[in-house]
Length: 398
Image (tube, rainbow, N blue to C red):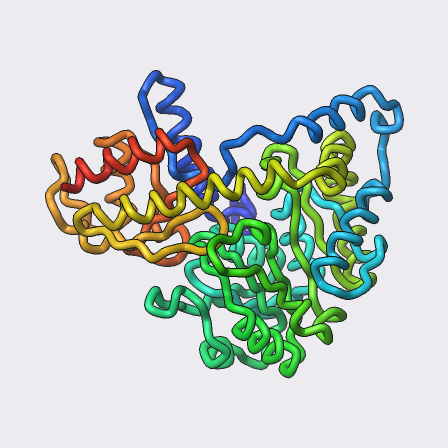
């Protein structure tokens, strides 16, 4: 029997829809087209100058020209441990930290370390595109729990309990959440943490957007609210969103020492240490001033309000106010089935194609996040582009 050229495990992976749409928009731009992209999940600001300077210095330091420990530069692990200890209000040591190539590798390492084949991982839908693929690659079974816009896309304990089976091992929790901008309230976080602890579940908490919250909404760490989860939890974080360092690829996982040790063994064979210059830059971010991060947050807050206002003015579109991250997740259901140019899009996938072709605006259809009928639009782009892009969509759908 002929063997398939591509393994079933890798052949079944879906390409990252957000990166695919961003690539298509960039290709059109490169061909001279005037494309406005709402697709990419990255700040449009440059990395702060003091971080870039630290990287420049590190380039000239021969220490960084060679292998360093897989688990990360000792001083960066200590800085991450100290930051996490402040966030959680509990002691965290450097031995509980593994520095990874972005938060994506931290997630994969975590699921590969925790999951045996058939172990179920619960997470809410709409979900970030990488969650199910990362779980599947590690041998786990992704179990999305459907939420509803009427509840602010927030899951209740009852919904999570209804999805739990004897094979459920992990709850993957994210707040603020991609793609909806959902932020769970303190009492909700506490109730979900208590439920997870009572059912002996592991909790993997994605806190990459923790500083990007708006209005009177506060970030609440599930581990901080349920301290007994400390021995059964992994905190995922990184520098990409807070310091506008998406391309530097520095994230981390913080958890019990046995899990970190096992994940370090895995990473030692996969990638070894994260780029040393990028680690030195990340350290400067963690130890430096936060004024640029706050300026960025204020700009996002202004754009968030404007985007919601403009989206709600487009025929067939309605948008709930997001309170975290830098995404809006509007419903485009009212715009489906109508004639737009030469086509009559019946799904948000088709509508996203029409918007790119006819209006030269890139948006990500909800299907990528397990939630048809909606679109994700990032407001991490200039005010002028935001206005122009949304006006083009309004004109097309009007």
